[in-house]
Image 1 (cartoon, helix red, strand yellow):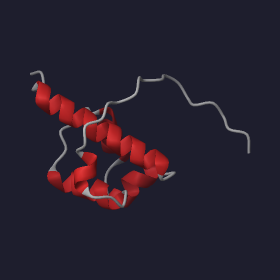
Image 2: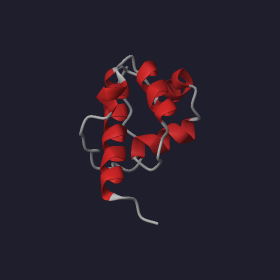
Image 3: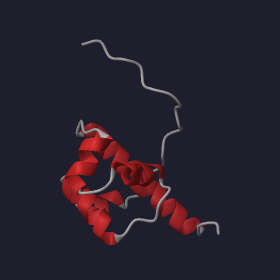
Length: 91
């Protein structure tokens, strides 16, 4: 059954905000999942907008990102998907 368009837009906004905040805080997906008490594969689905998360998970992610839950609900769009591993950084 396809998602309601409003729900799909909301899940995409949550996904984009979680991903953006995680990146700006220098966290890996694994580190954020651990901080929020979530499974890594579940967090990956959240960041793709592919799962309907509960209010409890939204709160756990907000706490792990040190932000207010409402910030995760702000309208945002996911960037285009880039396939493959990211390039190695020089250290």
